[in-house]
Length: 314
Image 1 (cartoon, one colour):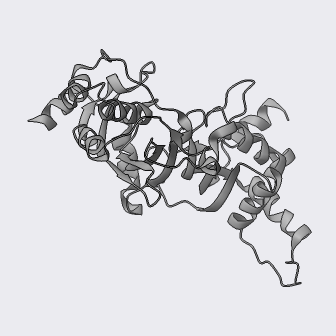
Image 2: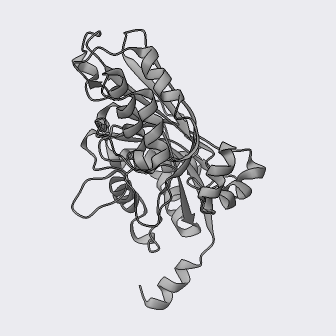
């Protein structure tokens, strides 16, 4: 394809699709594509390229709500994908090859359902990433910037629980015996709009100011400790650090006052364990009503200031 054709392709009208994705993060080096490493984004882009074939460029990008770290799982990841008319036509033409179900009834599939079926078909039956749904996105929808909250769950089996090896890929283990009420008290002390720099791995030019909307601990029916965290967004390694601080309190290595002092001081002056990734799952992403998507995206793009944090504390 010539340079002129590539330039023309870049301005082709597109249709945006919202995708629901789940994956077992054990064998992935996180979501974001990295040279020489297996990532969720990389695997999905390769599958999409195989589906679209010679209709690209431009190669569509998966824009994701939460860029999970290496080893972190997702049950309710959300991404969006912009497809040009030629790309949609290629997906639709593929319907003719599989126009009927095994019982002979017609499929009558939409472009959305065909996209899901083709991507999952390329990924394979024994896949560790699955596209659950795809649907035309509402006007103004942006998987990343339109989100109003992300909900994570962390599973931890302590000394008081029989360890289940079947769940070891999604549950962390500890030899300590932990008081769930003490963990819960530590968690609730961290809720609110704060600069969580002490509980993040800072990235260049990225803010660490977040609103932690809820943070709680409970035991499930098997006795496993489950942390539930919801925030407008989380910075790098924030969830596992917050969970680790609570565990340190439960083990008697940190006090409740120290947990808050670290948060307000902005520096990790007390060493505590950032918990392993395997216990962490991105459960769900929340979005506003369709009419508020544009406004939410614009609000999210505005860099937060410490003045906002100070105002919220008054």
